[in-house]
Image (cartoon, rainbow, N blue to C red; front, top):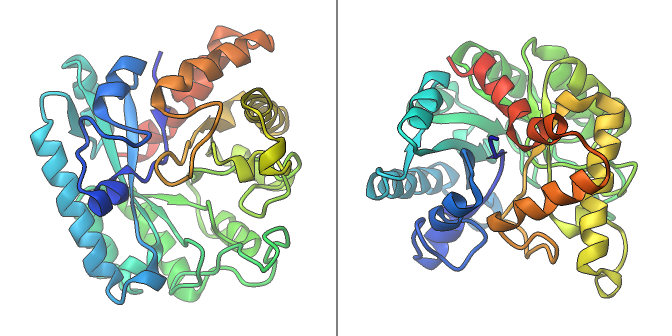
Length: 321
């Protein structure tokens, strides 16, 4: 079995607190990934552009930290630039790391910056975070349940999509407005992903996807990563949530998404180290608990394998050239 997670914010967390990738106090480290049997982890370079005047420079600093951690831990993990890299890492018994960007503003609206980050190893771009940028608009209304169906991608955003398809960089529509989602659908031909989003029919947060979005993304061959953020799993109050209820909510989202889009459209997108925590799935070692919960619901081993990693790997096999 392959375990592949499309989103964590571990690199940004390590930059902030000075800990290391091998063994730390967060949700993700190499020691626990090995214990849990992980195959590949996407590491996002997350930038809050409201907290920095230099998003490009801040992202470059995160790249340097990522590179240092890859070098320090090279006997355990290696970066993935192409599909062949993943295959070779597996043969060597190493974990794989795939670098992503969470906030298109780091490119300053310049294609040359996008190309530069590609050369540095970035293979997925979350087009927006929670603020409008040069590429488009996010889903972040005052109430967090009213989506933006009007403001989508800018002309620059559309040019970025075209360049990403040429390069072999995967567009990520998590955080993007509803209008932006349909712009991505219109202006791309290859699969794209929602790296860390859930089902809006189960929990109404605008960070989640409507059934129509799930179907359209699935028809394109893309994948949605289950987000473990409790606020995107359930609208119960914090006081009402129990570990059992939270785990049941994760399973409900998994069942709904696969019922709507098919078994091939779902993967993992934990958002570990970017969320306060999940009382049912507190870190990477708890993935087995999710597998057990799906098994108890009657899921076949092949279906659990698909969601744990095979669906995401199919997209990577197609795009990472």
